[in-house]
Image 1 (cartoon, rainbow, N blue to C red):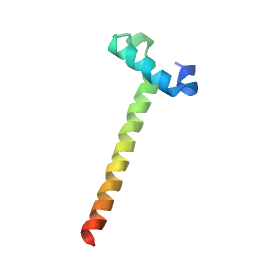
Image 2 (cartoon, rainbow, N blue to C red; image 1 turned 180 degrees about the vertical axis):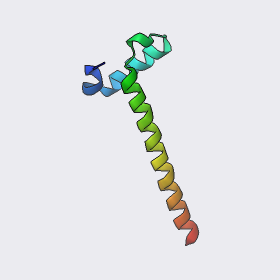
Image 3 (cartoon, rainbow, N blue to C red; image 1 turned 90 degrees about the vertical axis):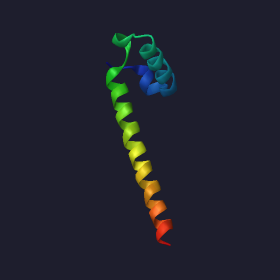
Image 4 (cartoon, helix red, strand yellow; image 1 turned 120 degrees about the vertical axis):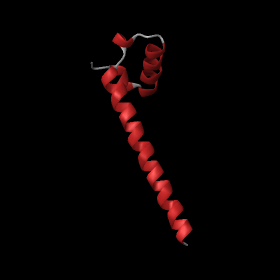
Length: 62
């Protein structure tokens, strides 16, 4: 499903998708982009954790 709002106004798309999910309108939800965004969030959080642990270890070694 190609959602023009996803490419033009990401914040609006997120609000719309959250509302669809909260109200159970799964057929209207942009499932493929939602899955992609969740996966990207997980990757970003993992990278951030690794970066912070690296900094922590560097400080501990000093």
